[in-house]
Image 1 (cartoon, rainbow, N blue to C red):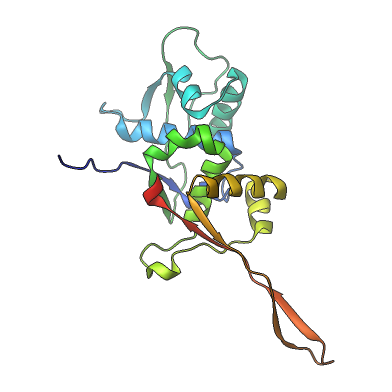
Image 2: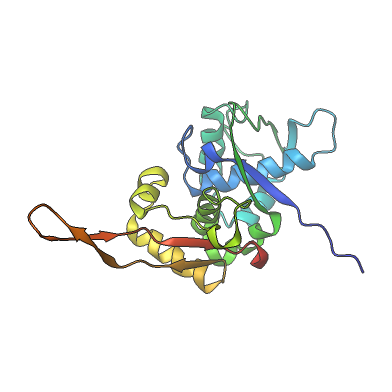
Length: 213
């Protein structure tokens, strides 16, 4: 039996890192699944999507219609979808016009589509963090250098996630064997002009395990 080829969801790094948008984890998850729906749309006018919004909420573990509506309107704000969503349909599909790249992007990051099935365990914050870490990893480099060494201060600043929440979801991702974190302690780094010992603390190294997705 032949192995099925993995499918991926590819997202611009500018969106992953909030460089041209201000997405929370719900907005990011909704964007990711709409991007996949756009890619898989068999119609000639691929940007015209008919979405089962209840299924979307189920996949992303969004329990409140208001949360989904707010995220959709955040996408509308950035011209990723062309329609403002005033109400979700009670029957039938949600019809939207999707623009996957409303701006020029220089680089993209992709992770397996199957990762969305782990949102139940890692949450949408964990899902976003995996894309974030992966976006800083050069997969063309030698294996020993395939890690991210971003600081938590930068994560907090760019994604708006507080430090306790970062730690919480890093622990969850480690438990699910999706990342390995190599921690660095204070190290002696020479002396200053007054012969005081200088200490330096290097950022943690984050290894993302795509094979576990």
